[in-house]
Amino acid sequence: MNQYPGLIGKKLGCSQLFDSEGNVHAVTLLEVGPCHVVGKRTIERDSYSAIILGYGEKRESLFTKPELGFFKKAGVKPLRFLRELRLPPEEVAKYEVGKILRPSEVFEIGQWVDVTGYTKGRGFTGVMKRWNFSGAGSKTHGTHEYKRHGGAIGTNMTPGRTLPNMKMAGHYGNERVTIQNLRVMDIVDDDFLLVVKGAVPGPRHGLIIVRGAVKKGGGKIAKAA
Image (cartoon, rainbow, N blue to C red):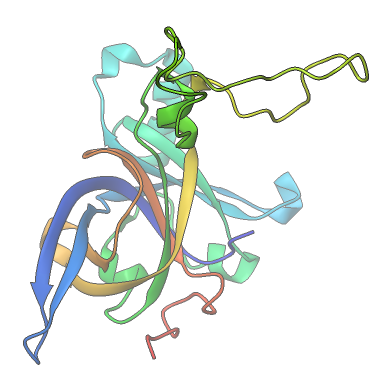
């Protein structure tokens, strides 16, 4: 489990960035804020420690009265997305409810991060698109309407059923995916912008969560080699 600080936001799109030596890097632009701290979880009260971050705008008429009361108690406007980030108790104590977090307070240039998002949803697809099948059977010699089939899926009398995890047509995409070890190339605090090297899952304006990289030691002290 990731125990390092992070922010929630949305993916803006891809671009390129030139470094001081003239090398070009493929990057993804992420809008990580403004993120508001709307609550805390403590070990004494909740048996675990975490902060609750809010992001995005939404009309007040779309919230229930208890939800509006929760935001009013935190001293922030109603927010569209809420996510809990589990952190050690000493980290949770650093954050004040109602505070707006800026990217430079959580990340720094050169740091390694993990980005979590949802892949593009592609609906119900066949086996050739979903699993990269080449197609079943011959394309000639009297074969009819069988070019994009997945082939046989059953068994003989024993066990006499379709086995679990068989690759078949079905729902493709819209899966939670985490891309690890992306390097922070630039930070624009005024626009709540984070520039990371590499690709990030999801469509444009898709919700993402950025946290310190687990495999690189996380935190602001973890620099790129």
